[in-house]
Image (cartoon, rainbow, N blue to C red):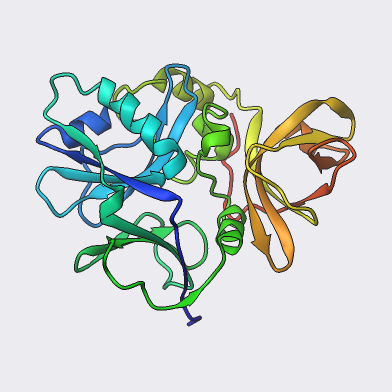
Length: 293
């Protein structure tokens, strides 16, 4: 087994939902089923606008306290998400708070293989398996000692995320995607059998009417890339063909997870930033995309 390596994800935070209606409230607001969430699993979930555009992406699990659900997400989208969710609480018995100061969030590489989103409890800590080979998210009390393992760089962690075909909504990509544009439903982030949530009709229509024209793909390039950076096709230098949703370094190259027009993959070449920019070389996704009907 490879040695575990770690990164303290200081750019992540935690929202606490507490109360008798916490699960049912989140169930009615997010893309995932929280009503049936057990203590051995987590939920990848998105929070959408009424038009089905993702405001935030997160992973949620049941806390130690009764009627407590915790949501971990990139800190740059936390405040706006907390504020908007709070607007809809109304008479529900659910209190939403920013619990980030109570937790340290770590990304781990080289962990034992496990099904994505399965959860292991270790005292006051939880470890959530992520998509990809031997990756996990660990959440523990802020004062606890760091988990064992060599420290890696933020760029290396971001590269592993991109290579796994997983992209989190960041400040630069708020409202840029419907869930399927970043393969969110393939990764387990959308439950199409649950009841309504903001944007549900549009998300369902995209799924069942075969109208998806954009998907997340993985590329390699020799130049650095940033989230939100536009991508251009050689045959259409004036109109962006996609946008970088995640990027980092791996094996000396930049790995890019990008939302791309599917038509742009059929010929020509893709370039970072402008039509004459660094060439993006496609690499296989680590999971299969179901064919559209």
